[in-house]
Structures are given as structure tokens and as C-alpha cells.
Amino acid sequence: MLYCPVPDDQLNKEEIRRVLHASSQVKVLLEQKKRVLVTCRAGINRSALVASLAIARMTRMTAPQIMIHMRHKRHPDC
Image 1 (cartoon, rainbow, N blue to C red):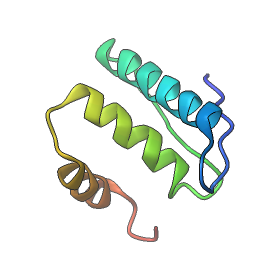
Image 2 (image 1 turned 180 degrees about the vertical axis):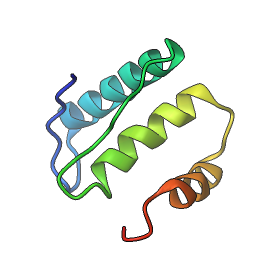
Image 3 (image 1 turned 30 degrees about the horizontal axis):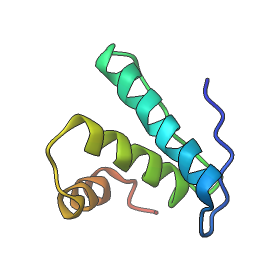
């Protein structure tokens, strides 16, 4: 389990560093074929940011492609 406290607001340099580290860890775990759950209280902004950055690190997808992918995978109630 990786705990990455990040506010649902504008991020400072330390919080950006934490998000980048978390996305790197997610990438490593996925490459090891591990199951990964990225979540936050609302499950909309912070978790999507970490998951999107991990996807960016693993693929050649552009930011708009990642956004479309994430919206397609997200639960309809979000």
C-alpha cells in the first residue's frame, strides 16, 4: 500500500513530487503484473491524476487520448 496525501486543490512542489512518485510506483507495479487500486475520497481528481500519469509513463498516449481513455473506463456515476 502506498499512501500519497494530496489535497484536491492546486498542488505545491512537494505535492507534485508525491504525485509523480506515486504514478511511478503504479507503473512499476503494473509492469510486474500486479493489480493496483488508485483511489481517493471522491475518486475523481487526485486518483485520476495519479492513474493518468502512470498511463502516460507506460504508453505513447497523448494527454487528450488519456483523458478519453479515463472517461471511458470511469464509472458512469462519476
